Image (cartoon, helix red, strand yellow):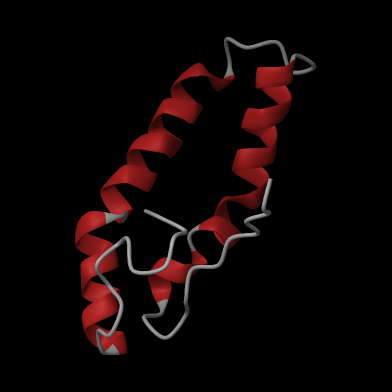
Length: 82
């Protein structure tokens, strides 16, 4: 996954091909992230920085993975110049 234009190799692909590539290449990474977060969630203090981050990740998960569901959707990042 990359927010830099052209870095994920999906530029110029038809939406259906982009969808298939995302499922093949990006969904396993996201699945591993959620699995890791779920595995440590119960052992982290909820009010710690990590606990808050894990809670936020789990709450925002449906929105994070939405781009996997439709090849017409483009990834967007709020990159700010330094």
